Structures are given as structure tokens and as C-alpha cells.
Image (cartoon, rainbow over all chains, first blue to last red; front, side):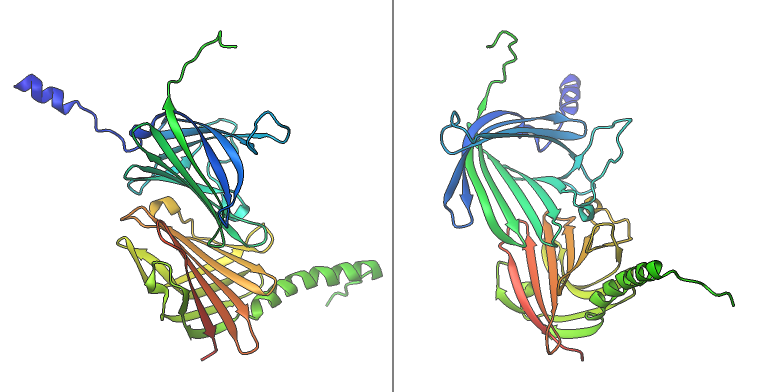
Length: 182
Length: 173
């Protein structure tokens, strides 16, 4: 009985972000405020554990339907989030670097203020920015888990009005490191 | 009393330097005073709290800073209610922007305030994360001087809710 109790006591509670950890690939449609398709996005997302929380690495290839045609662009981003004083809310965190000049961003200076939150099966990432002309933008990335991957719903709001969106689907894939891969 | 001799070329520079803060002060002077009105929803969203609320804003200040006290919608227990927000703003390095000197931390539940004085508009903003629900609530007040006083547009954006807007016609009581 005692060993069983001890074993139970050592079971670590799962962090709310752990179900989202993994590698995903997928595709999405970019939409205008009126709901018209304005482009295609090929998505590559890795969500992995990081100090105090988790990190999201993302590569997005933007094209009009054929990524072998000129005009294709590729964007990548990597950010980490660590737990905050508010339960369920993770703040953007920065790696400790001896030469870093700043550890926090200042929204009034124009830096984006970013945070994440988990609500049920959804991982929400927010990015708030104050523009030079006094307008403000809030970007929301909602990634919702299902049996085989994630659905993505991105919205960009300018002064509280939606001005563009992205809707897509990603499947969970095996992440293989292979030096011989061509 | 010592006499200060000003060279002709330097005189225009002195005038320019004197005019710069005066212009900034003038931009804020048109908003100074106490203003009252009633907020009427123009887009209800899912936050009826923004409708039919008594709205009061008081602005006072000098060249590099001002104090604003206004009726704000704040998060409480997963919902929202009207409350008073009072903040001292000082001019930020970024043109047009004013920042509070309060050391607030959004991620400890403190509200993040900002202000922007643009052409014919003063914007007061407030963003807060509800400590109970973890959801954010952003409340932005756009003040525009009019012939009879001021017009205000209030914009309320909250996590998981449609944006609500209310209009207020403000007069000096």
C-alpha cells in the first residue's frame, strides 16, 4: 500500500500547455475583412517546452496557390512564454543574455506586448501594438486541439475592427532529425 | 540685472524652441476641464455595461504632463463594470505618446495605460488582464473637440466578446 501511495505522490501534474506540445504542418487561407481569400499560407509550427513555460516556433510560406511561382515570401518567428502572476496567463519571456540590453518590451515605445492563455482546448496568443499614428492593433492566434492536430484562427483588429484573418488546419507530425535528408 | 544679448540668427532659434512646447501645451489645452455626458451604445457587442453609463472626464496639466480622470469600464470577477480611472501621464520619447509613471505590470493584474495626442484627437487607453478569468479587457476613449464641447467614442474590446462602442456628447457642467 505504501509504495502505491508513494508512486501516486510522485505523479507530476500536467501543465496546461503540455497537450499542445508537438510538431505540426498545415495550410491556411488568408482572408480580408470582407471574408475574401487573399492568399494561401503553408504553415510549420513547433510547440516545445521552454524555461518556465513553452516556446512556439513558426514558419509561414505566403503564396497565391503555387509556391514555385515568383512572389513567394517566407516568414519565421520564435517566441517563448513563461508563467505569470495571473493563473493561466503566460507572458512573453526572453532568454537570459549577458549582452542583452532589455528584458521587457515597452508598448508605448512601439514594441509589441505579447502574452498567451489557455482556455479549454485552445491556446491563445495575443500581440498588442501601438502604431505611430495612435491607432492600436490586437492580433489573436487561436490554436485549438483536436484528435489529429490543430485548427488555426488568426484575427487582426485595428482600433477594435477586424481588418484581416487567417483560417487553417495543421496536423500533428513526427519530427525527424535526419542529417542525410536531401 | 544682467543683459542678455541675442544674435539675430539665434533669435529665430529661441523662438522655435519656445514655440515647440507651447504648441504641445495648446494641443492639450483644448481638452482641459471637466466634461460630462451619457454613453449611448452604437454597437452593443456583448458588453451591455457600456450603454447608458454616466461618463465624466477631467483633464488638467502642463506642458510635459497631464492628469486624466475618466469613467472607464474595468474587468471584475470575469465581467466588467464602470469605474473611475485616474492617471498622470508624462510625455514619452515617441512623438504624440504619453505614458504613466506608475511602474505598472500588466501581468501582475495592473492596468496598462497610454495616451496619444494626435491631430484633433486625444486618445486615452487602458488594457488590463482580469486576475480571475485571465481574459483581457481593453477600453479606449477617443476625445474630439466639437463646436459645443467634445465628442467621445468609447471602444471596449474583451477576450471572447464582440467589440462594443458607445458615443458620448460631452459638455462642461
